Image (tube, rainbow, N blue to C red; front, side, top):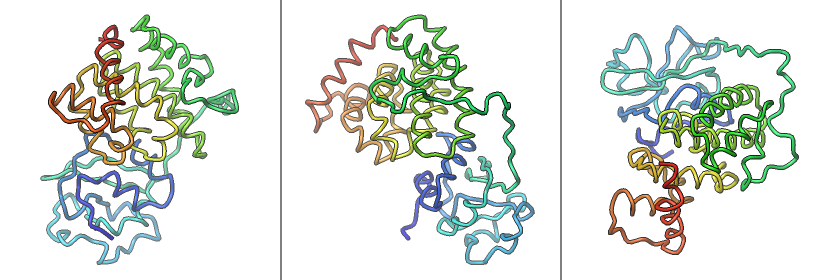
Length: 296
């Protein structure tokens, strides 16, 4: 297995897991600003917090620096020995080490409390979701649908934010109860509406947290492309160069949205950049410079 460097942390964790369980662990416990720099490993475990079948940790699972890894008794794992631990983990969080950040796994049971009256709530009413019409995504009181209508018409900015916050809470509840990959994609359309509304209201940290539920998952790029593109254009119009750099540092994401990458570079980084997708990039620049002025 090729050695993963710390800046590949997201792909490393996905590669070392065999189920969709990993996406929930990452999105609930980490954030886009997570920055591991220790090349010996990025995952730590507490030997006192291990399930019965993982109490004995093989020596070849422990990073070479573990003997000198003086971090409150935690053990640093090798990057290519994570599969069993990620599969058993119930949550993860960022652990601030002396010289790097790490992923701290927990194996304690996690219980999600839901109201019985909400057990039968559904995210969608139609059999299909049209990617070009994200207003089809709505919750029990239509807050997401109304939010998207306000965003597309550039009306009542503050109300759109309030509806986005309400819709966000609903989507979180749906995501925690979701076990189906197709439903997960549908929920992600709703998260995109929330992300766009947050960005419109200059709530960029909230937008980044929300988009992390879908924008770093490669299989979601194709079905969600037509709604991710307007979100990227909103970020370009809002001049969020640092965050766009973070997103486009993901090679698969950059390749899938290359014209938007080149528009971002041309408008925010290097106006003399030689574009390879000029025909596709020019309409994007026109929308950013003209159509999105009213959102600034």
